[in-house]
Length: 137
Image (tube, rainbow, N blue to C red; front, side):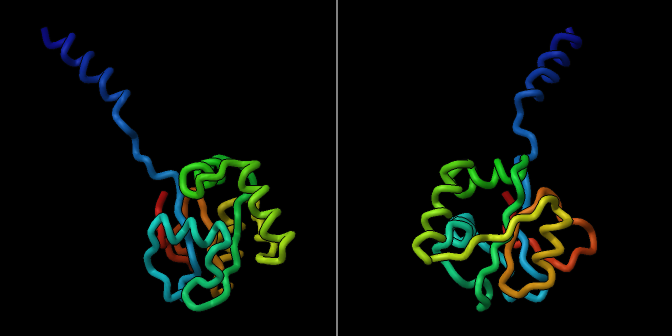
């Protein structure tokens, strides 16, 4: 009698939501920003806000990969080509400058750490990095 219950419980745990955390939005450690909600992150990464912590925004997007796919679709609501088209319009009309791209979490951290107003996202923040997490997704 115990074996079927254990099997049922074990099989149900496969359908339980796993840790939904896919990544983190980061800013330089000295930035006055300490916490953001999804709406503010979306506004910044879609070019609607031009300042982070009082400094001009310097966006750092990751090159295509799991973190970017999740971030673009779930947080920004514009997967792949839609986001590219959105940014192309902003750049073409002169309302924004081309965001930087980085190839890995370490590259994003390096670009964000030394620049006031820089903001980016990573899968995981390395220990001892000179950045702080302002939003988790």
